[in-house]
Amino acid sequence: MLYGADKWLYLLYNRMHEYLLKQEILHADETMLQVLREPGRSAEIQSYLWLYRRSGRSTYYSL
Image (cartoon, rainbow, N blue to C red; front, side, top):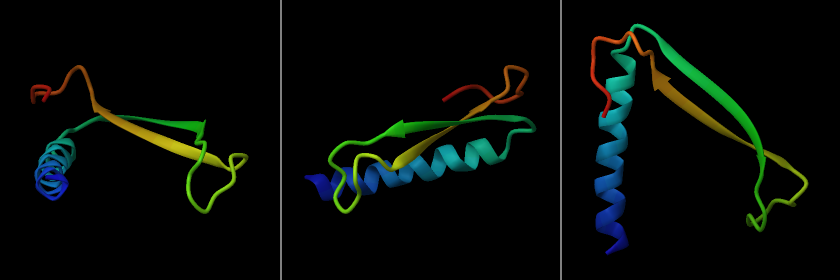
């Protein structure tokens, strides 16, 4: 079951990535966060979350 979901989500991710690359303007945000109980890393190490979105003036519609 997880294998099937993994393939489907990968296809969705690729489609969204292609869509973002077609945009004239992208907005990005880099946020630091703390991840607890991540294997091989202590809780004191900073992790990052990157968010990308299209501009409100984009000619393409949101997904």
